[in-house]
Image 1 (cartoon, rainbow, N blue to C red):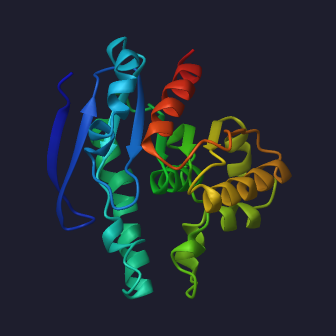
Image 2 (image 1 turned 30 degrees about the vertical axis):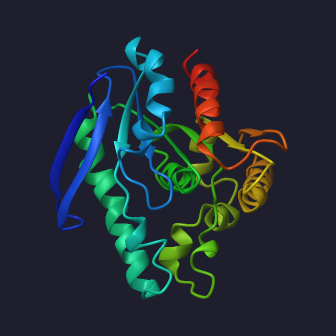
Length: 244
């Protein structure tokens, strides 16, 4: 399968950005790369290959987004406020520029997914903009911004920390009603390198239960590590379920 490659100038970021689209029909699935990753990682690590049957049959199409984590979440020595401002510019690039460019119909709702840091981004976009998304699949995600901003807090970081803003959101908030109509799938292993991700998944699971938001939270075995070999298995399992 030959992907559709795009490169265009982003007004939000004031630079060129790239992405790839796999498939021409079916549910649009926005894919975020893992930490410091690029838009071609899902192809290089075999995720696209595993999903090729669903793409070829027209059930899904993947839109693989480029990330800028090295300028934002991973730039631990940089100015904290500048880092979160840059992240917000990227957030608006995705929602205001990229998504309108790949949408096939005006009312089309997106699925969103990612592994590890990509799982964080997927959840953050989903919970911040439930008007744009109807399905979340996060694999081994973090859900709180404090891991990357341990000693700095401001309203913009709060707005990009699902664990925090969901805790602070009342049960009768209009977004809560929207979440309850959406599909939320969170998965994490219990093996090597999954410790912090497992803790965050349990934490957001508890918040969603307390807010009465249904979610499928799946804890895989103690042999399931934080690695592509497991994410390939997980993405096929869940995508097949979601497309049934």
